[in-house]
Image (tube, rainbow, N blue to C red; front, side, top):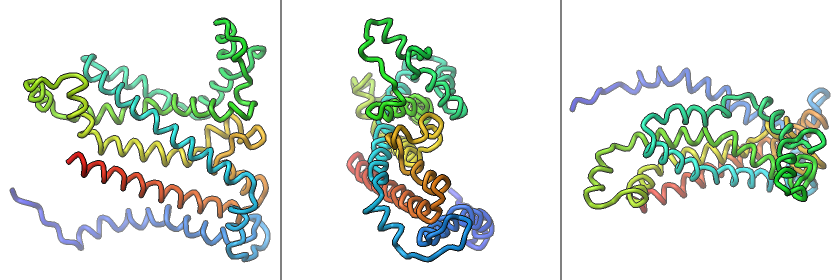
Length: 296
């Protein structure tokens, strides 16, 4: 086989513009945020250099920060729980439907809807029964009136209600990814395994699951990192309330930066979020690299 050999200089010429653009849009803002995080600045008046005081206050004084970190991590963990479900749905679609593309597209529909639309839709569903809330009305109809709640205004259940909306919204996204991965597995492998008596779940256990590990890793990373940055849905539905019960890192950063006018403090929160995303990605990659070695 002839391999096309391209000089390194030619590769650099084509890569350099994208690299410069990526640096300007990603790395430079991160560095600016790191510097701004060392300032006492409201975004308008003269900034005062305070060193690591913002970070010290963040870790030791801020009563909202650590609970928001906990909720963010729980949000990320819950988001990964739907990926095995998405894989099972993808396998069933491939196995029992001749033309599953319509259903896959239907599952994907919530992903392309505006977050504002989704937020307003589910706010209506979660409304009290007296305001026409569908969920509470269904519970009353089923004789489960004791289960009715003000889903978005009770601190104990508001975050759980948001978890469910996020799972509903992005299930189709992961079904599409898993469906693409399952359909890319050559059918000859299953035919050969069938001769040896490996069918159904047995074939999935020894063929589908091991071959889907790289695709599974992509879904895990996208779900986990995307949930760490969750912002828009929470702002539309609860705004971080009630009493900070649904505040996550990104909403706390927004409130500090633009509502409390503590721009330097908000930048310190942003730096923490970037580091959390980076560390999480490294951990997930390490775990999956170990898993791939065991399967190989």
